[in-house]
Length: 122
Image 1 (cartoon, rainbow, N blue to C red):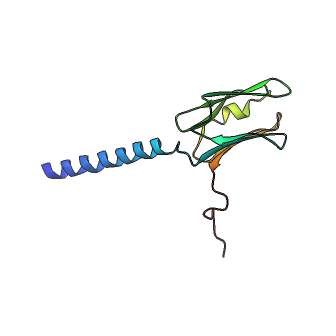
Image 2 (image 1 turned 120 degrees about the vertical axis):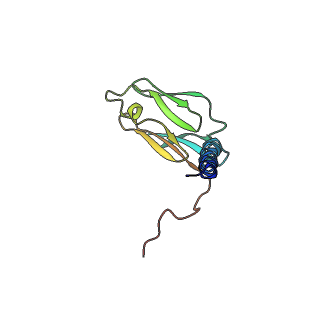
Image 3 (image 1 turned 30 degrees about the vertical axis):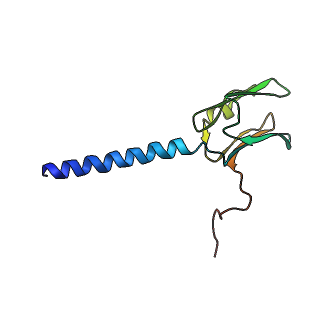
């Protein structure tokens, strides 16, 4: 390979890394909504930007602590015995964390109702 080939490879790699960084910074925009329900009742619904860094939700057995990461949410503490919602890890852009023993559903998604199709069946 010549010297110019190495420079071209370096430029392509830097552009790819810059694109990944830009995408990661742009996911916490105003269209991402946090929706928390407990026992099929809406507890809170707000944008990810407005969501507090640490959120505590009281349940019958104790409290669930939800922490805002850079681009999403994670459950850091739960009173349930298996702690599967804690082990599930962080969600970002869109996703769901469910704590079945406490009846809590934490959803992260778009505000737009009936937007683009998820899939098309023929």
